[in-house]
Length: 212
Image 1 (tube, rainbow, N blue to C red):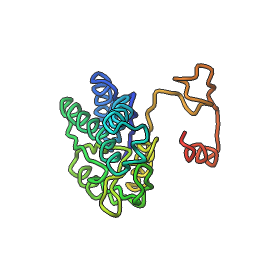
Image 2 (cartoon, rainbow, N blue to C red; image 1 turned 180 degrees about the vertical axis):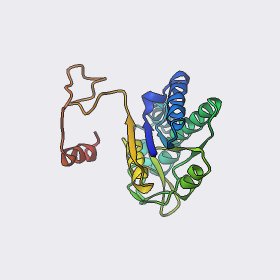
Image 3 (spheres, rainbow, N blue to C red; image 1 turned 90 degrees about the horizontal axis):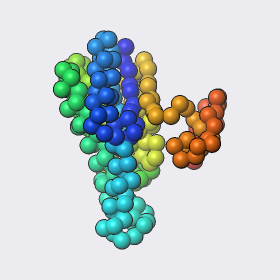
Image 4 (cartoon, one colour; image 1 turned 45 degrees about the horizontal axis):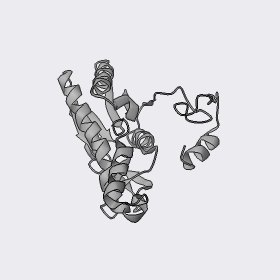
């Protein structure tokens, strides 16, 4: 069985959590499954990088002023996570290879900071799987048709995981989160937020397109 697993920023926020994710990945691998793992940036790394850029530029609209360089900067967060997770998996006794969005051939349009995936060729990912290794792919990013690094916007790592699952014809796509489902608001910020028991695909698509 081919499984795509996605781990969000809170799941890989600390060395201890990274090691925990590595243990879960290795346990899944040792059940005989092929694995592609998509990771987000650690914790608040993306926000911290944005704040750093604002301090350097001395302007709060740094993404709008420097969209190409913002993508170059923000894509670094996921690259850190993927490399560290590959190391942690290796320490657990399994082989893993980390790949950037461009190495995984996630092809996007030319829109910086909010790119759309056009296609995923995934030849390199398939080669990694065929060699018996675990593929760790940086979420949230790709490479444009103009060969520029692009990012997919908020929630981009989930998009990466689902798109890879489709491109690879995976048997299952597992999205790991620190919340139980879709809420009326961010439950980490709004204590009164309620869990929504069911939503249609159309409602979810509308929420996602609005930035949820």
